[in-house]
Image 1: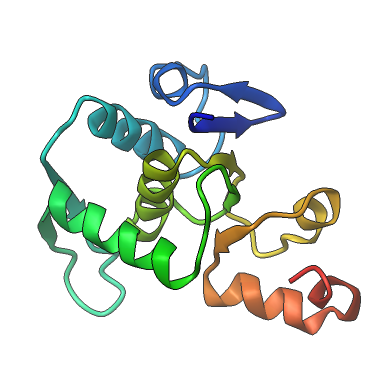
Image 2: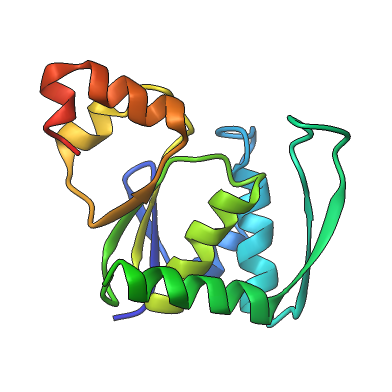
Length: 153
């Protein structure tokens, strides 16, 4: 099984999704995710990532493909996530965390479900279960605070 992208209830190959044009940006970070996929699939060796600037002036860092691959391999090995896993991408793909979710999925032939970054994930998590997801603290906090939603974790 090869990787697939599930977006707005449609399944795409990564190459097809990376080249889609949307009449309007569906959500913040989607275009950055598509660009990352395009670069990844074209075997680009260097990536440039701008920091958020939350702790200082935003800076741009050069990240090699080798570094991304090593990080993705360590994560999937440490968490024992198998090829073909179903993963929820619900964090902003403008930032490295979102891009790393894509890299892990593309490398391991995951079924990547792309959702708009949102503080409340109860709707998506009540519809479907996932073997892996990365969340920002606010998303996790919102799930923990809701008795019914915390069971979805």
